[in-house]
Figure 1 (tube, one colour):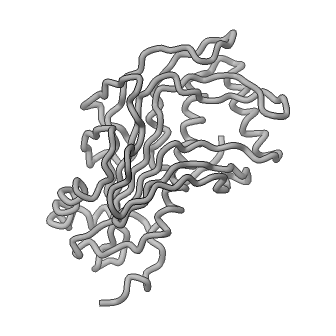
Figure 2 (tube, one colour):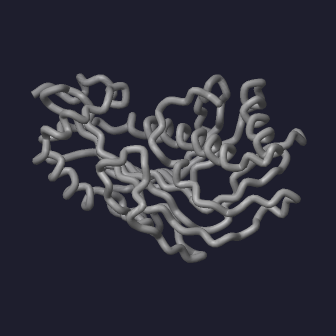
Figure 3 (cartoon, one colour):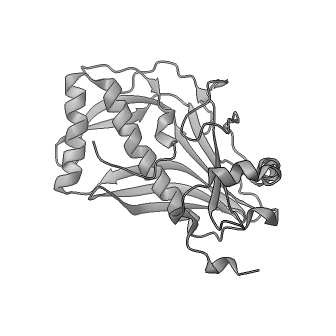
Length: 268
């Protein structure tokens, strides 16, 4: 058997959905083992294999004010919590500096508390001005969609960066790499200013709803292609809570689309 190190990095490969259908036994193992390998979290999930980039409507999550959004407590044996600050991510020529908490374990990792700031550049200013223009027009639906797309792309890039630290096993080796991404879901669009005094739109947490996305990775031995299986957590419910105190009041809404897998960003 060839060493795993001979493979190209898995995130450069396309997902092999046909291989997944043929590997029923392998997938059944993956689904059972992921329960043991998945990092313990407080956001329950509703499995829906058919939806890679859509959330299941089969369940909702009742939130309390002290509900955590990510792994809590002392890391299990073999796991280490690390805070990453100002990881650069390029988005269509705009550099974002991303900070997040990652719990790295032997068989995978989880990402939570992800935030980012913009660098000073013409392109970054244009992205922020796009958001401000939508806000001023009262087009809050499109504004939420665009801001969620940006967040989803950034979170996917961070997941791929963290995945670089793990060799991906063959699917028939009774082993896989599992990842999980958490993000606050109850958000309100607020208009504020950056350090230069320029207007900016932010997504402020207005409740303790939690979105999550789980993924498992392995390599098909026959095709040498990466096989990925994803499941999205249930959509939480949010109580209205005004945190902006702006003249224009936007609703506190659920934004779970912000943690969907999105590996291509084409701008707005």
